[in-house]
Amino acid sequence: MLKELKLYPKYVSMSLRSGLSYKADSFIMMISFAVTEIISLATVYLIVGSVPQIGIWSFNALAFLFGFILVPKAIDHIFTDELWILAYWAVRHGELDIYLTRPINPLYQFVAKTFKWDGIGEFAVGIVIMCIFAPISGIAWSFGSVMVLLLCGFFGIFAFTGIKLIFASLAFWIKSSGIILNTVYNLSSYAKYPLKYMGKAFMSIMFYVIPFGLMLYYPIECLITGVNAWWSVLWSAIAAIVLMTIGLTVWTIGIRRYDSSGN
Amino acid sequence: MIELKNVEKYFKKPVRGKGVWGMFKSLFSRKYTVVKAVDGVSFTVHDGESVGYIGANGAGKSTTIKMMSGILTPTGGEILIDGKHPYKSKERNAVLKTIGVVFGQKTQLWYDLPLTETYELLRYIYDVPDDEYKKRLNELIELLDMKSFMDAPVRTLSLGQRMRADLAAAMLHNPKTLFLDEPTIGLDVLVKRNLVDAIKKLKAEYNTTLILTTHAMSDIELLCERVIILDAGKVLFDGSLEEVKHMFGDTRDVKVTCKTVIDGESVKNHFGDAVIKHAAEDGGHSVTFTIDGTKLTTGELLNYMFANYEVADVKISETGIEQVVEKIYEKDRAQGDGTNGEGDARE
Ligand SMILES: Nc1ncnc2c1ncn2[C@@H]1O[C@H](COP(=O)(O)OP(=O)(O)OP(=O)(O)O)[C@@H](O)[C@H]1O
Ligand SMILES: [Mg+2]
Image (cartoon, rainbow over all chains, first blue to last red):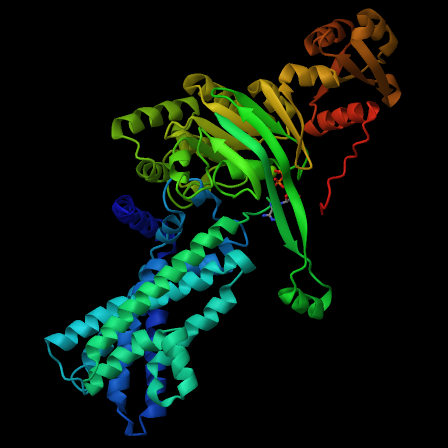
């Protein structure tokens, strides 16, 4: 582990310099991620803005939730974007060979080699939206609620990383799992809406099966209502550990089935 | 020491139905064909040996190399490198530190960055001490003649340069064993010759155990003392290079073209049974001599030709691995043990 940590800055620097020739590309990507998110928030406003309140949720509270989700999403995007390549491409084309011949964790090598700084765009948009809407979101701010927010934001990163790892590793069985991963990953966008009022079945899925709701939506709901906030931290932590454990297990079993490619 | 004990690797290929409906069905069916890529291979390689691992396309050479270098897990049997399994998660790191791998078809170099960047990364990954790294890198740069392209991004290197760079990358941590899977693929004759010479020097310098696959018999002749021939996943032959040569007879084809007509018969008479046969083409202006390498060198034949004819062109054909395998088959069949060349359940 220590070795991996010590090596990480080296990987980041190599990744940054190796992307240098495509700098313009990344810059455009960064702007476009940011703009997409802003447009998406505007859409929420168009839909919800005319209704003064959906149960406990005002538009301002929803906007805050929207900003909050962007932050762990962006952080995951910056660090583990390569998992998409695992799902769509790397297993099918036998591109894990070189990582498997080196005496250091192959998953680490594979993920560490790409540092997607263009995720900074989403991250910044998330922070700005949170700052704008925090005072008018109806959350009673205190040291405790800030801690809840920070901790749940941190565990929220693993909602994305864990889901990505689990479903990308399925590629070891089905060669290409990109479409499945994409479908599951996109469920995260429903955590931006008042799940509480979206039907029991769907809410259960978002809480207990693909826990984007539990890890991203529920903490903010608790902060707004002012009850159970610390419970939500505990649930987030447990969900993060469970997801990462499943993800690493699926990877570990899967990599043994890895077939490389015929040429 | 490398030991393979009855190693098997089977690949499952799903049976794809025809048309859209068939494709849909195959998503849910468990039908597949089994490809026995490696089918019960056993051999032992001692420290310092250099082994040519040869066989026709699809024989299972790369698959074996991948199992020995930690990429694939065998379906059956056991692989031990100095007593450890390269494919078991607890033992792999210990094994991988002692081996280096080059795949001619793939590179491990960082595409957009100068070579030195990848080498630095490898230095950290393999925990090579600073002074040792510098010393070794300089030696390798010298040996492989890489000075001129050390600072160019990898994507700008020629294939020959890239291959040398990959070779250096695999040697940086002073591996005890080096696996080379078709290191000369796609290289022209001269570049190939240089690379083979460099590998030879590396081996002499560091006494590395070498396991090499290739389709060029000349690579094997220059680099290996021992040859293992694989066919359809099974070992067909395991012995010294001398034995192989002896088995298929060390013959080579030399085609000589002259302005005047060549009297093939008189050449044959001059050398006796050292010239096995001669075939004239082009109305006698071109003759292909098949000579027995144990009795006559190509040089001796050519000297004679130069002395007696106005030679315009000479072509010496390399014996391919495929021909060797074919010859060995013929021997097998002649002995009447009835093996046929078809592997089972192959594509
Ligand atoms: N990843 C894979 N999935 C399915 N089948 C495979 C895979 N890799 C290899 N095979 C099959 O296994 C057999 C052996 O392949 P392998 O690559 O080991 O041959 P090889 O001896 O290296 O051939 P070549 O000289 O063409 O490189 C072939 O029939 C090939 O189609
Ligand atoms: Mg091969």
